[in-house]
Image (cartoon, rainbow over the protein chains, first blue to last red):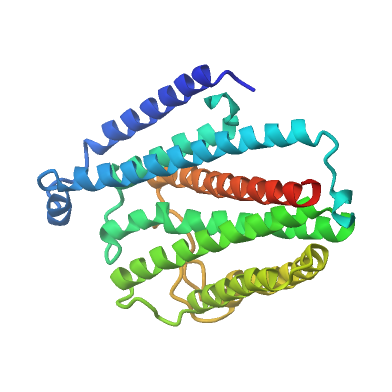
Length: 91
Length: 223
């Protein structure tokens, strides 16, 4: 397994490159489009994006928390029941 | 603390953030009727892709259970089916919202819509069936058989039947599928990562569900 810090740095770098490339390609968007103007008018649209990103940040934080918690419980169980097997179900 | 998180889960996080931000902000083709709603392609369609892959994984583990009688396979099948149901429901809701904008109403009795709704009900029945049987072995056996039958019915219902009749969905009833008209290069740049991201998210949720179920089982049989 890769060290997570290195992995996170790499992933953040990839994400930054992808998003900056997209930002550059979006510069030629047809801003004269009224619908586009209406949607992008003010900062409402950015607020929508920020809210969605926040919701998913909470979701991912919860998933990571659950993952770590489960790992700890599994470790506990492994030390308590080293010979875990499903055959015990018939006991 | 974060060392325990497997690499593909980090990939999932990155791809999902990319999908959310790029999917909402990047430029899109200006098409009649679809307008901005075409961005739903990054959410609605990948959710269905993810759901189908998860249902496939659930089927594989059900078959494995029937061959090996390992309860952990049954638990995996149940976890995959549960998350697939959640993703399918999200897919139906995002699809309804898209249909409202482009086809004029929330529900159009489109063969694919109807097939998807029936399929979701079948998998809901699968979960109810699981909950109705107390004996773990019997439950696993019955659920595995039901899963095989439901999958065999569901997949033709959403992928084959709509192609044989009139349908509003792309790729069905003589409509063109995703091609150069409605999925240009800019959209592919987000669409494919979105498919991978949503699918990995489904696998992550299923993994957590499976591990929780397995812990319960271990405590039950060893404790």
